[in-house]
Image (cartoon, rainbow over all chains, first blue to last red; front, side, top):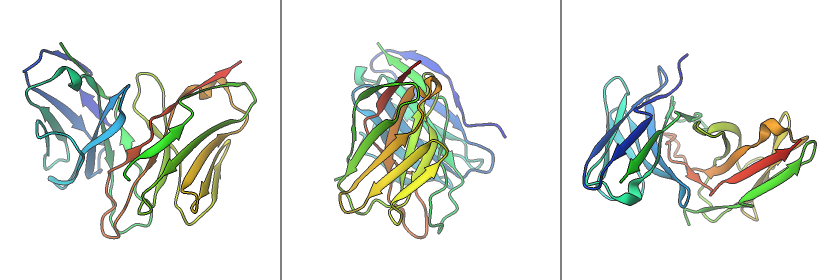
Length: 117
Length: 116
């Protein structure tokens, strides 16, 4: 079974631009979560999508948005980029059975390295 | 209250030694505590996880010890190998009965180096 794939792997943008990152979850997985990883702040939760609906949201400004399509693929958008948005953006997918005592494992993709100049 | 504090930030261990990484949390609503391992250029991968109704879980050389009253948990890597050199993250999440959500709160990470 193919793992989580993220495109592109590397991206360079300038301040003020916007960017869209893509995530294809493992086949059959219904939940997609996004995380931002930086040396200073570590791994921070951005948001989670399940069945095309945002189920959870972290403490990020409204410039960060996302969506999920009917095939569970997800995109993340950052508008009006700032230097501080430079980070590794990770996507994770899980089956998300619901009602289970233990959460389904989240499988992470390799990430998209975004550099804002 | 949403934070998970992890220590040490970095750790150097000799091959064959025991690596110990500690985490502490405040929010008693957390009910799932996974550990993730991350190699350079890769995304984190689940190593082992525990629920607060058990005090210890062992999988091969990896053991989680959980102290509910102290709100602390730790990862022990026995017989550490150079291939274990990676960054380790503890995490915590809260899950409702109807939907196990994908929101993980991560610790800051520990960079482990195992010397041959």
